Length: 532
Image 1 (cartoon, helix red, strand yellow):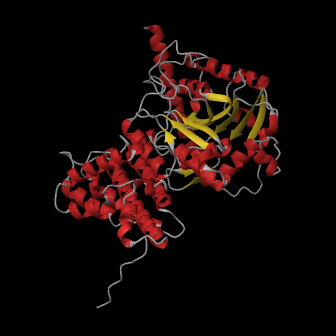
Image 2 (tube, helix red, strand yellow):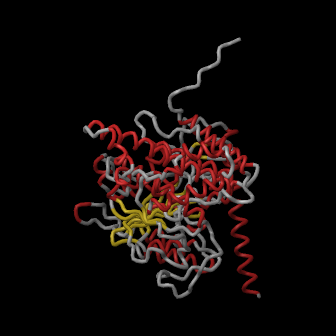
Image 3 (tube, helix red, strand yellow):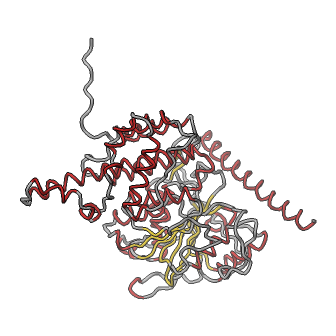
């Protein structure tokens, strides 16, 4: 008989940790839908993380005070001092909410009651978590036996003990992994709380939010803020140099965002409550240096007020909030602020219900700095083609920034052929793709990062073109990059097979058919309204 394999004693690899936790999610998959078990699993993972972090810090305190010569009999008073934890960014976890107690008592029944009580006592002990954690475990529709198994599985996950990685870093990666998996599981609805990481990275790398106020009016689960923080870390900046402000209309998504910021150590102001940005701006006095946003595409059901002071460039139509989002974002920009926004492609060319006039007014006000056409299939949750709008209030060179004078110009980037398919339905932008887009923009703007890298801008047929306003006027203020960048030079060494080309072009054509059908529907609705 072969010898039994020894159970590993070290911490799990990230792949093993992902696998363990996703199996935990599957424990509840049969008894509730994806949106429900997302809240259960992420809530429990968060509780396990703060418990692991607390235990890790507790051992550090013990070692520190003993090393300082404190008698063993007096160590306990240091271990029970909340300031010793909070000063290191560790949440205080009361004894009844620590995972050891939860795992021990879970097999004895009433696990739902115990978990709700643990969530409650943690929130009461940590002001930053007040009203954030889910108290949903002791409900009639929750299978308590499966819940106990879930607690047992999550107990196998260790967020501490990883070489050169803190528990916070490990959980942060796990949390992002789960958000992505749950977004895929929920399909179209998942897009409400998750923006593909590669798209967020384009926004962050173009805007470079080193210092100042960062704002997102529809922040979902907080992915924009997390990527901004990662950008700062990668460029050796200081997290405290940015202040984060966000708003989210969905209660459950708002809770996800609060937890996401907490696990990444980001001090953010997402307001004390969720709320509709159009109905009630939760940050009325905030003027942001950087705005990153992925609003719901083509939202028709929104709180429209015709006399809203935000509509400086024209009143957006009731049937589509795209230009309401853009004008709200512009209204929140500081004097030298910049913004990056993900929107449906239709926003670049639509003319119905006054949208063309609003777009023209934005161009003529010299607020639009760059337009980027994105490749298809970046968003698993929707087949609607997307683009990026970039705004800048500082297009003229001023002071030490020494930016290039781009008054009256707009940079157009056609990135539709970029990206790599990771499976049959989803594409991602690679790091090289992201860097090419960002470097092109920075070379055009003449930013410090471009000067440091000795980058200079030049139009690149088929990829980028800097257009003056009179050229844009000649195109009736349509902002689709394909109209401006022209055709790429023929590549004699093109090794893409005919079959691959046909497949790629067929997919693009089907997406264009979908967009055409959407526009036809809008036109029919408008005609019916006129004839009513």
